[in-house]
Structures are given as structure tokens and as C-alpha cells.
Length: 257
Image 1 (cartoon, rainbow, N blue to C red):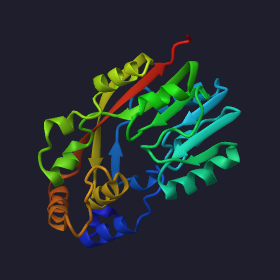
Image 2 (tube, rainbow, N blue to C red):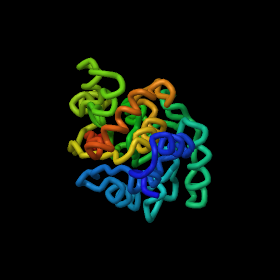
Image 3 (cartoon, rainbow, N blue to C red):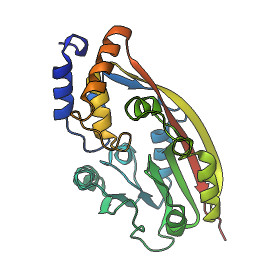
Image 4 (cartoon, rainbow, N blue to C red):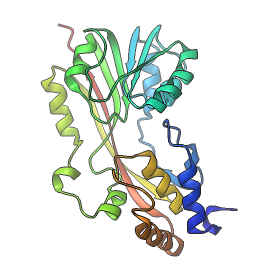
């Protein structure tokens, strides 16, 4: 039975029962789509990892992106703060020879100065520039894909209403450039794209908000049931709910001296 022929209650119940750990988004297949940035982050990350001697993946999630690399450096370490993701990443990355370290997102990185020649991250909650610069050795590179400003805010504002301009402008690439440069890094590449997202059924919206918990921080189905039902009826009548994600590619280098 396709999602479009199922009732609101069936779609929501299925989404509530779906596991949310890790960054595996295969559950959305056939139910939601998102354009991918033109730069192909996972491929480009893999090329850099193949040339590195010691690499760190910050906020690895379930380790899926790091594990996609064909070749990992001799010394590869990943950090993650959410216990279910720590367990998932450990199971996925240990067979590849990578070590997963449990570390809170807002804690100092638990490594010595100049420990790595490459630091990578896909969608970190925040980029703690002073810590990134500290653990990079001279000539080392930070290579990451960040979530940009007002990403998927059509979803956020549907449930929470219009957001303050300061909130919409958070994660702006210009601010991140300034932060990286203040920490002593040289920004060598910074590209931005805004990408179309489509939610084809209300279950996909529920699963998205359960998985990406910072979008609507107080989200539960019970709390937002009237809005969910209204959105379900809108999707049924008009087609997919469209939003736009914001991404930027960020590459910075610690000077040799």
C-alpha cells in the first residue's frame, strides 16, 4: 500500500515507530526527496582522507558518512555525543580500524594540540573554531559541509510561526568565515547552495522532525496533532510540501607557521 492511500493515523503511527538513531535516511525513500549539493561532499571527503595520515571526523552521527570513504587513514578517530549514535558508529567504524570517542558537542575536543592533519565534519551542530584550529597540525585542513541559514525553515515556520531575523540568520557562512579566521585559519573555499526538499506524506514530516530534533525542539505528535492533520490534508489535496535546505562547503587551512 503506497503512503498516499494510507490514513493520517497509519502514516503517523509508522513514523513514530521508526528508529531515529544515526544519519541513515533510507526510510525516506519514496516519501521525501532533497536535492544534493553539486560539490559531492562524501566523494570529495573520501579523496582527502585517502591522502591524510591522521584524520578526525567531528560529530560523526552513526558514522555513515565517514564509513562511505573507500580508504581511511592509518589513524582515524570520530567523535559523537549522542549515546545511541556512539554505539552505532562504533559498530560501523571499528571494523574499518577507526576509533569512536564519546564527546559532547559543546565539550573541548579530547585530543592534544596538532594531533591531526585533516578534520572533517558533515553537518556539525556548531563549528568550534578554536578547538578545530588547536587539533590541526601546521598545514592541516578542515573540510566540512555545514547546514546554512534558515535551512528547511518552511517546515520550522509552519509549526512555530515566523522566526526572528537573528534566528533565521544563524549559521550564516560570512559569520563562520569570520569565526574561522579569528581562530587563525585561512579559508580557502566557501560555497553555498539552496536545495529543494519535498515531503510526499505526513509520515515523512513526522520522521524528519523526530530525527532532526533541533528543527522544532518541542515536537511531539500529540502537541502538534492539529497542525499535522491540516498539513496532511494539504498534501493530499495539493501535492508535496516543499521546503528548501541550505548548505555550504567549507574548507579552511591552518597556516604552516
